[in-house]
Length: 510
Image (cartoon, rainbow, N blue to C red; front, top):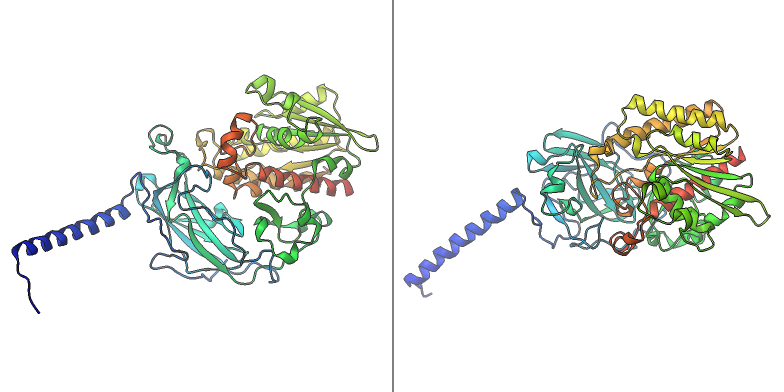
């Protein structure tokens, strides 16, 4: 074999070796230190996992959810519409910028009904959060609760995850700061809603036998028998379960529907509410702007001749004319019975809303209420006292009224951060626990009150929110850009509304 010894060739070989070493060093640097660009190759294969991954964990507190295993509600072979590599799951018309946080320790697959531990690592100490917002999106949607997270050290958080529906999922993560850095709003090159942890969007499969589903209508069960639920992809529901009346009632335009494991919840047409509540004379909604949004976008149009949010529910960006202005309408049932519907605004002094009802001589027969984000800055003692006093006053003034306490919806800091107003996920998680415990306390005092867990329904659906704390589109100006960005906006309020009318039906039977 001939050996080539030309000096120019030797020089070129040296350059090639030097360039190769420099390139490898640059790649290592980019993976270790974040910048404003995406750190990962866009060609991540399905089933990708980093080295050193662990499989399912066993031990105290870890194991299968109690319940009989069956065929499950979803068909794991049905592929849902996944989010593209360049798409942002919470803003489909924007891109993403990943880092300096990493989803690590992904197992080769998730075993259905089994706890797994995922690790999130932070590369820059001054940007390391105490918690993360983790989202698994596939045939169902899962966001682990805050208590499932453990901060191992200043840079590492472990999250315990359990999936109950088999199929293929995408995994996403965002930092969840107790106090958002001020420069997020002033100096960040890209908006916070573009920031994701590295490895977000990776695919992972869940295998195994899911829980056996209850298919009876949830309205036939007592509140304590309904139990927890999750968001299920409407298109992934197994064909054999699609013949039920609950499935036929669903809005097929909704990509996901919220369904309990123990029963199935049909969609309620708002116009049917007077018939569902034969004793209803005056239904009053009391709450903040979140409650107003639900009333003006879902309730009012159903009883308006125009089918739109008109009259006092027509959006005007004015505090007195729209935001806090009471709203009243009425509906005549087929049998001739008139049913009044009202919304009354409540802020951080909620007793004022009750004084208004008393002053106007109103006698509500049914009340849907929540004291929401206005109370987020209060400490536990002040919050407990405010809610207890509010519910006690309702019970004393209208003892015959059926009342649904709607827990406060969660916030989505990856859309917009409101930590400067006390609206953090940790604070709302705590207040959710407090107010949920006050409902049985009031029941023991004879109050006809039920619970609808809007917090639980909202905390895993940032993609259906508006600005990080509201869940519908009230302003027509927002409709044009927000609907393509978040096609599911309003879905949480739809699910909450169905649960409210179901709970009201139970109270009617008592």
